[in-house]
Image (cartoon, rainbow over all chains, first blue to last red; front, side, top):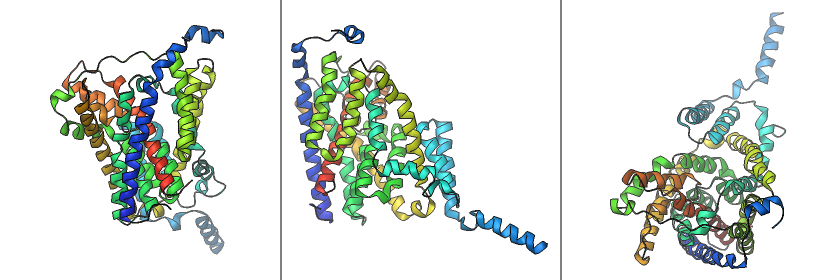
Length: 54
Length: 376
């Protein structure tokens, strides 16, 4: 166990976890903000995909 | 002749569980019946509570072979213990979920982490009550309001707490329409609740297909401890979005999901034997779970209000409480609370963004927790 099994350990674990969670999920948010650029690669037509050629 | 009859009756009695029956069994049977009642009469999570309630009743009938090695409920539990069932649930959830609202509004994604303060409040509270840090972590994850993730993390950290944690998590998820609104109203003004969100942009097919692939990559790279769950969530979603595997997506979202729910509910209910469940620890876990939900709701709303300090175009702070992972219950609660103050304020689509992000928020919190506790 990296974190000690004490109340101080619980506080430390919580602080690190909460902070890192916000950082990581913000990172996912940033990646998602870049998604519209994918559309520059072209457009996929739903009907064409279903019919097996696009 | 009489002696033979008495001996015969005695041996029959010995084969029943009558002698082992104690008041704890009666209490748990009443709890099981209450679950079935709530599902049938109140409509609270019937797909879960009927199976859990019934298997809870059976688990408290002394002598029932179903929960012993060789019994069907025992093998159902092995699916949970070996961590096969939770990823399969996520597989089905992925196949039935439209992640469009999350992709369309990435700035709301951070609310999926903000609404998880409850996890840590419950964790610290549990530690103060004398639980080990691993047990406290399992109890804290109730605040993520994500049943499969709670089961997954609990099985890794404190498997002996599975019945209490899973029952608390699923019960509070069912009760969210009662738990969340008072906190949401307390922390927002009427004017804030009336904020109407602008329409979201349309998400293209290419983005929808790229999403599960990209997220699957990120999660396996950064959060291997919880990767099985999110990977299966993304596989299910990929089956849905590519449009050429409709059969698989439909099977994952319907037939397979139904089978898994049956197995899961039997497994959870069968662990609710009175001697394990009727303890002071259970009451403490139930109270901590409620605290986790309350703080999670509050931190989500406050997180949204903090975001508004920096945003030119303000967001409705009710979206914050949707950051709790329970999909789509938390989003629906945000929508309903907003509707009370403005009959034309349809928040549901916008609330689904943080709500889905909450699934990732819980997974990330759980993954970091497992890593910090040295559990693989």
